[in-house]
Image (cartoon, rainbow, N blue to C red):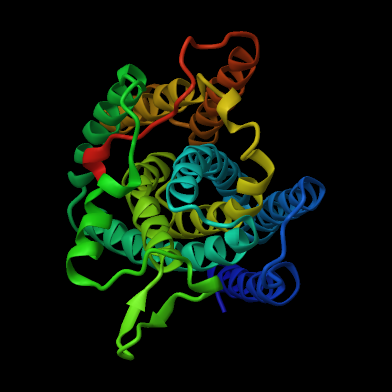
Length: 326
């Protein structure tokens, strides 16, 4: 077996064991996750992700240090973007009156769907770049545009899940029940016909929201690394920790008023980096130095935006997404 194959094998084993842990131990039906439990679980997922980065460092030989730096940079990028997911998740749960005891199970199913869809997205994206290198420049332009739009967008117009395209599609083609079915996803009416509960709708919307965010995050990761191993593992590890991060931050997420601007700057930086790749490789031939600069930029922008948010409050509270994306 090659070193990459060994790393993939270890990643697969870790992924299966982590999912089993989540399903069997952490995900007890109708269990409400406390802040303390959320903190412990978040530390566990982050520690697991960072440990895998250390494993890459030692297992990949000469390219190990560079790949490990790329992995950590990509993971931090994905992890910070996950906070934006949480803003929207809170809106969806509130809009559909999801009971807190159902949060964990609904999030877990949505995250499992997100892992499958992201794997498909990454596979397609990597295949396109391998065959048509110029696609990277399209990704770069897209990231610059997205970052600029994210930085300048007005948060005053609130995202309403019931007005989203996903909900309208489901409502048009499926018989929806106006309740959660006491924790069920499908119930039957008086005539025995199936109806899909609000929990089913929420799961579908969570997966759809993650796909929207994947349109930003996957090109961003490809701007940090071209290694398939780094792209797959950083994405999936970040998604795995999303559920515990939701429970940890749901009460404090509204305090990060300027996090969106910090993420936007990072996206623009990575987009410009992709567009100027040829000249950057001439000016800074060392891949290790390039990755170190990218990691430093991510830490500076994300950390700086969080610190700035703590000491400076915006005049408005809502955090929203563009309703046209759904």
